[in-house]
Image (cartoon, rainbow, N blue to C red; front, side, top):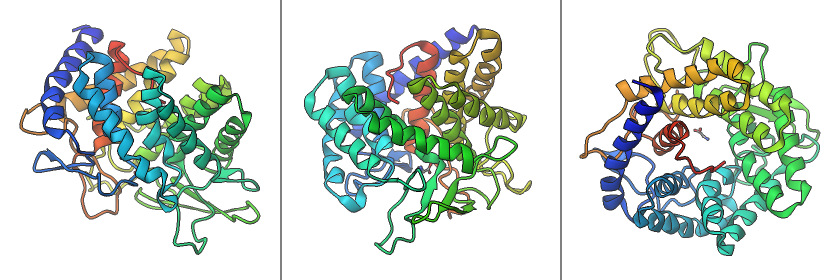
Length: 372
Ligand code: GLY
């Protein structure tokens, strides 16, 4: 079967299943499934993944024009206002929360309340920039400053909120913060082989590098696969927004490293250097990396881009053939996702696994709404 036909077939399966799922998931903001039913994190509104269900709804709305999807996405966006008003709940994940919700809405409708939410979130994100260390602070702490110097690779995916705010306001402060953060990542997160650290700690007073942590991966110096995936897609997005080819080169470095470590099965472990007897997988890493690789392929001349497109297709075929649940009785699609190597639970459904799977398939069918 031609790739385009294959992608269209998968896209139809997604639409058929998700219409039923959306009908029974109204008024929820899911993170995972319990016995096949999406749970609801509306009462833990500051959780970093709370924009993905809204984003999924916008992607489905964009592809089908079914009003139900729009209605659910708008409800998700309004619920997030409680987070915008909670200073302790605002961290660097504003891109993950408000790009797939308010900014997506604004791109489609031009509504000024949606733009307002996006700009407020971008202002808060820019306010986390450490002037001497030239990095965006990731997480909050209890007020003791213990995490004031922490930056994490995931933040590369939050930078597009700043690029959007710059494009929207013509105020280059947003651009400077995003570009400087990306340059700090180039300098302090990258290793010789193209892999990246998850967490880097800087001295928040002097900006000096202190140390790196293994974070959600196996150990310090290891290679947490979702972190590699955030880096691939995040640097590609920095390139797409700035046209600075240096960012594309860094995206390629991590993508080359990732591609060289894809197992024969095409299924991605939680960490590329986890112990050989550990079989834990993280399907989210596969679908996020696939999104990044498809964009790298588009940004390059066809002969240079083909290996990235082929790798993305290999990852997506492995997910479709082995890790998709098409049953109407189960709300999630993608299975065997893992939040962190050292967590108690592994291999369950996670909302951003479903989100990035749909985005990746839509990239192949041409149905994507540009979110990032
Ligand atoms: N941004 C946190 C994670 O990827 O788990």
